[in-house]
Length: 206
Image (cartoon, rainbow, N blue to C red; front, side, top):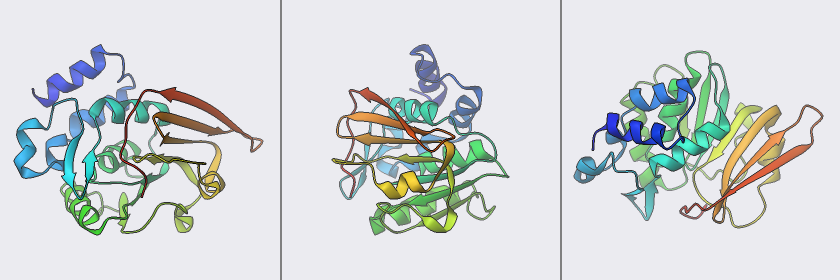
């Protein structure tokens, strides 16, 4: 399968819909974010191992979560559990030169891999993205507030209050909780609206 065929499959399934997100999938090649020995499988619509017990998420899942988040040019976004850097790079492409992505990854070997991969697109040198080797449990206050917060590993309890506190009014959090994807939207009056989308599988949040 090619990247073009993978994107067409996601379009046909109705998972990919928003033009700017589709454009990012076309521009940011998943093959640049998988281990060398798995390049031939880069466009399979499935998660792939990236070492240290971690995976690069299934394209369908990444597309679904980005469609829920709805990142826009100029947005300031926090990417938690950034792994090999594919989602960070998709987001950096979407937010463009006036936006910013803060990527956090706790596992040192995976963080180094992600840093190297994100750098292939010069997003860090251009100031569009920054990456930190640390836990995302408490968010990242120095760059808050965020238009969006997205996580790639499953929580098994409450969504941290720190994430909600660091979210702008009208902003959204999209995160796995157990086997569901949860979307929290902060309304202008500060109250939180929740939606649940069951039927997904993720590595656990570390």
